[in-house]
Image (cartoon, rainbow, N blue to C red; front, side, top):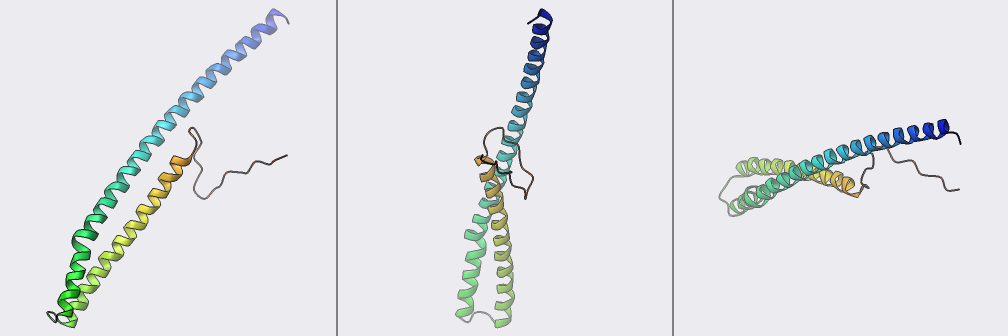
Length: 134
């Protein structure tokens, strides 16, 4: 091999090393950003679940049970009972919706955790192409 050929290969190798270093740096930036977003998602889910737990255990469920007790003991009219019962049904439906949203966020977090480091995110609804076995 001539000196000119060797020099050309060395220049190409150095260029390849630089591009590889830049790609690794970009992958590192993306990984840090994904980890940051995953932490934000985790905080959001924990906060939402905490609020739901407080609502369900503290006010809504105990209020509904107290309403049932007052109605069964004859302390309130059917009209008052039905109005308050509808309020509690709405509150519980809202909590169920929030639980579903939290469940979806947790599923997204699980998918993020299960991806290998450095894997490119897939757009929603798309699957990775299967490699053909030969």
